[in-house]
Amino acid sequence: MTNSRFDTNKYEFNSESRKGCYIIHGFTSTTYETKELAEFLGNNGYHTITENLPGHGTTSNECNRIKYTDWLSFIDRKLAIFSNQCDEIHVIGMSMGAVLAFYSANLFPTKSVIAAAPVFHFKDQIKLKYLNPIFCNLFPMRSKYKSYDKSFRDELTFHGYNEYPMKALNEFRKMNKLILEKLNNIDCPVLIIHSENDKTSMEINIKLITERIGSEKITIKRFLHATHNIFLSSKDQNQIFNNILTHLNDI
Image 1 (cartoon, one colour):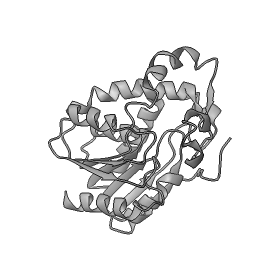
Image 2 (tube, helix red, strand yellow):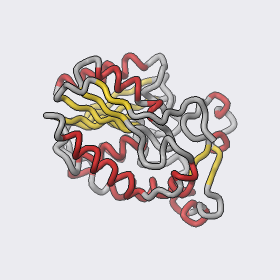
Image 3 (tube, one colour):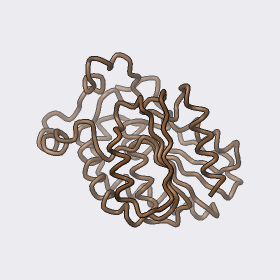
């Protein structure tokens, strides 16, 4: 199942610019959540690309067939191509996309990393670490709606797939462990964006990054109103977009 907040398209803006921003969406989501930022940065001097990761923009069943190495290989290929088109590359990621943005900084001479709503530590970390590897084959899907507490889940808006592909979620967990161990190799400037209203990316993720990252240039920006889909329309969107633009222009 999918909903109207779903996009199968790749977007590219301002391809004449030699200043590049590669923007990566989150787990089970699509370019629906990154298109507006890509267009904004394109209108402000940057060559931007955002496209769907393997297993995304298709079906949740297909997502369950993906291994985390497929996501890593995809980023390898795409950034290798993009690096030949640009003199500088900034990688911007949301949620799982933020994890992949850090991965990219280990491989390419990345000018900066922007990590929005990063998820290294899950809301149900213990269950996902010990139970999901056992049960994901028996119960390969889990409703997103039912994954959140009854006290606030009616207030949430879901994007991409309506369910979590649990095999793919286990791959996400394994990938996180690998990339966490490589954070100390990253020395480029890092901007972390967090919303206090985020029900998925918890504060502990900022601590995990700042304790491990090799970079001495770390900026943390906090907001009050944006949801986990932090680039989408909210009272904070304009400020978030302009903070990102300022960060890019100041490096």
